[in-house]
Image (cartoon, rainbow, N blue to C red; front, side):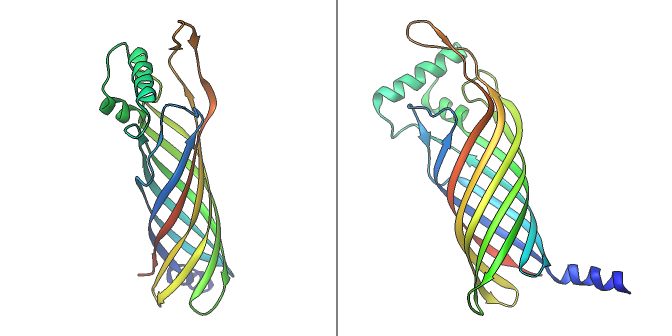
Length: 219
């Protein structure tokens, strides 16, 4: 009987989330002077969670993110430089459209997250969250001539406001900071004097700063 009650409690306290993150700043280990990443982009997730102790909640999140380089708003000199570098790496002339596709970072992540809720009033809660998980970077070129899948680690921090709409539906908005790491090595890259410069990152790091928003609901 006790086990049945525990199981029923877990089911009755399960919630689901649908969310989107608007990334307003993204930085990587290359720290390239030739391009930066676009604001916004595709960053969607779904999650299922449960209240496991007092004001503590935990959840499992599946996330898809597409991070695109900004190549059209950079200077003419920087644009020519990135075309030259990428064309040399691939031993053929590349268009700006092709390079944009090669520098895009598409990844999926599976994360375990823990939240603590602080009650402000009967409708509003402040939440603090932390998450860690695994990522798969899908067919990423970067500064290489061939695409590869990469596997790494994701870490995430959240703070925001949760607002009660009705008994089964809540809306939230907050700040999201995430770090992604994976091993990555470039092709030999030659400067204008013909010297080879090789970047080798034990941890290629991508940092994202964004606004997290979504709905939390119970069925």
